[in-house]
Image 1: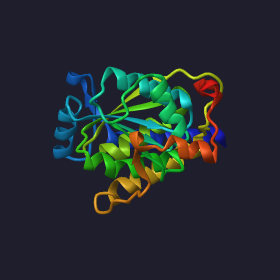
Image 2: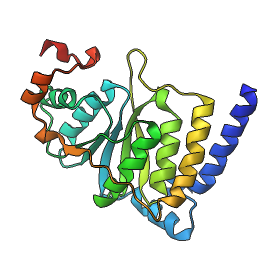
Image 3: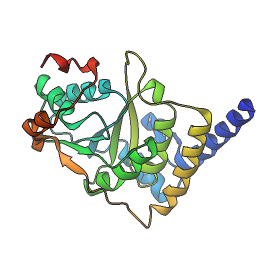
Length: 229
């Protein structure tokens, strides 16, 4: 039974690559097969200067990595979708002396599908054409496939940066979950050409009120080393 489901998912993934990727060997990357116009756009987007870093929730290690990248590229916008509690992310960036003025937090998503469902309109508003997705090996291939399908259908190039994890991240992968998410992503790739969801829980990291959070109380993953602050 599981083997059969696995074959179906691999078949779905292969078909999604027809929708969501074909070779772009000259550029050393992939482009999406959604018509000649979009193929051309994505071939250009993989070299586009309009870049963004995108982190998805599941492990504080991803936000630690994002903070390090922010120091290396302070002008690159960063969108963190449903990551650690806001004050934890603020403290991580502060502890790393990483700039916060280009970091935004999105709090509407409650799943990997939701990460890209709500991130897409934001990235479009920013006119982003090239996204570096920060995730973990344990979150693959689902996170990568969903990003390639949903973002790629709108001309946004996706590449991944894998973070080394300690312990077990919050994301739990399964063949069934991956298959279902790929199917609904393919469906939403079409619907999203005509409709965009609105997330009203998007805020800049620099405006987090740490004192208010301290009064309410909050807890961060111990791997962040923030319990000493």
